[in-house]
Image 1: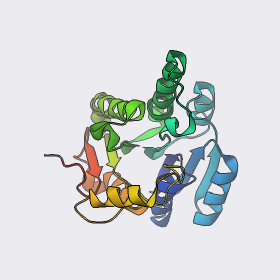
Image 2 (image 1 turned 90 degrees about the vertical axis):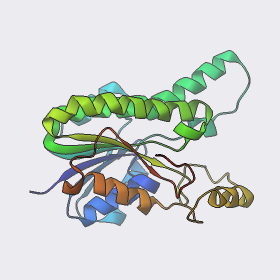
Image 3 (image 1 turned 180 degrees about the horizontal axis):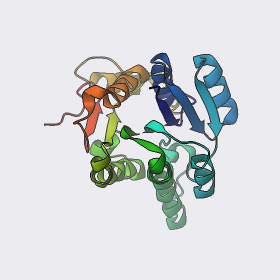
Image 4 (image 1 turned 30 degrees about the horizontal axis):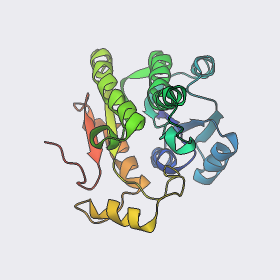
Length: 240
């Protein structure tokens, strides 16, 4: 039986790599995001089996409309998000600070919660929900790190809720991943070298590293792994 996979933020970087991996496995993949042109280009590049559905995952009405249009999903990947502080200028005003914290929470937590809640009725028994976290949840990064920590906490409750249906829920937590739009091309060469030097593997992560972990967690070999945060960071931040 073929899989249907939904990947939010699937037009570029990690999301695009995840979509490609599932498509290569023969799954029907639906990629979502706010930028229709980017999604269409990604779908065309990946090829057959990938459909672009542009909408804003932080908008309850748009999420509900999308959810009403699909059924029988095997895998949901909550990849949409990012550090919205990179798109803002800090002013020191309390009002701006409040907006900045809300923006990161909405982009990273609310999108995942809305999509998961709306699509749960359509998830097959034995399916998988995988949400992309961040090393920032452990190392700290202001409102962005706090939002990703909230994702990990929410996932614990989620795993307990969906477990009786044979559905797993996990978080994949990347470290520094090169070749993405995350840092808005703002990293200096020195900063990149520092991030690589912090790893045990001596290299930057790649979108394919995250896609491989997501693919494993969605596979039949990972049906007893749930409620977890799986770090993919080259040893920059270790767990035990």
